[in-house]
Length: 535
Image 1 (tube, rainbow, N blue to C red):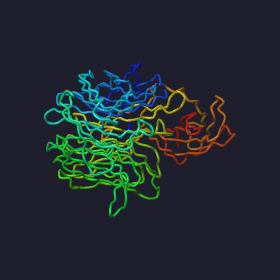
Image 2 (image 1 turned 30 degrees about the vertical axis):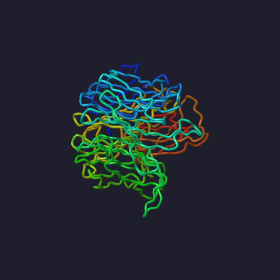
Image 3 (image 1 turned 135 degrees about the vertical axis):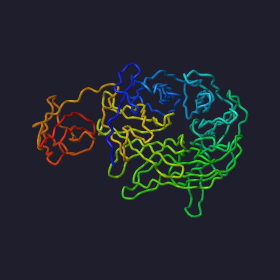
Image 4 (image 1 turned 180 degrees about the horizontal axis):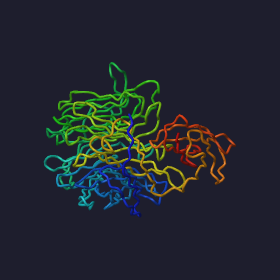
């Protein structure tokens, strides 16, 4: 089933003050944090909410080569960016991996920074107030002789902070920024970031390389998920290299139990996890790095529920011919599981979609939505969700990447922001998986208006002739004409005859209405027009 979304859109640049009308409770928005750099790859990497404000983290590589980041504070009622800060490490380079909201509505963040003097990756913890003023920031240059990457953090019941680190052994024979092996290290600090203890989580696996999440459980303990790279022999399935593991530890980082929850011979696992009622949690591995056989359904995205003692309660499989990437799992206010990511489509439809889903703690899928702006950019409707959060009123916000085009027609990845209702709808009462967005999704910098195709007769009962515009476009290689309706459905796709200046189309079998013929050259739009089918 498919639902057509005619929702509210807002496109924001920092030097623009655009009117918003009308305002809706749900919307989708594209933000270009670096409008002067048309080839800058931005992405919304993390999102959270406090009161009536959303906070979106943009991570990108600066034109000078170091990693940079911005945090935006956005008023969710009028969608205005009310504050923006840039955070740098002691030597410029810095990346944020995770955040935590404290009971007094402060923000804890962690990640990594490059120590160019010692050729090491270091970690940090910073505390910000809800106006994005830095309360304190602690850099940790001496926790280990190896590389340290801050993966996640959470507070204990007493207000102390647990920091989940990946420790990498330095590659002394090659690139000094590379790690040849790694393990999990947990650092506990007080409420001001001063270290209480610093120790490694013991396990029996050759390489625990993190890339997971950390969250407190109802019984006062913590779950953390990690990727394990190491050859593991399973008596039934053979030898595996990449695996997903779920650890339970107490507030002093003492192991309670560990469970291997997935095995893979060649697929890199990047597990995401959230804790659930009763002391257990749900874990899902996030990325698949292969293209499946288009004739076979694969169950290569699996979500598993474990109880407080580490026993498997249930498993949910997505058995479809597609590649899914999961960016985040969170627990909703009512105990449901919310997830976001990117869905590639099936063998019959390869268009990419942002992906959100809601599931009960018992494993029942409440809804699943795939979002694509197929009308505005039918040649590449790419929206990827990397993180999500739930607002106080039950609405869901997600961020990620939207692939805009710059003034030269090339990709310009920007920050995507979407707010949907508790059913995952941009328009109330939506149904089905595919949510086609048909409202105008304008780029921040307007592209030069495309030349207009000459179409006659118009209106037409069916047959019509499309001629090249007078701007002297010459038919080139890989030209084709595609005709879409206002729901983004493709009704006709024909190669443009080389050397011809016109093409005849018969729309007699199409339903009455307005259609949009678009001329493409090498999958890039070069001209467009409108035709009304009127019997």
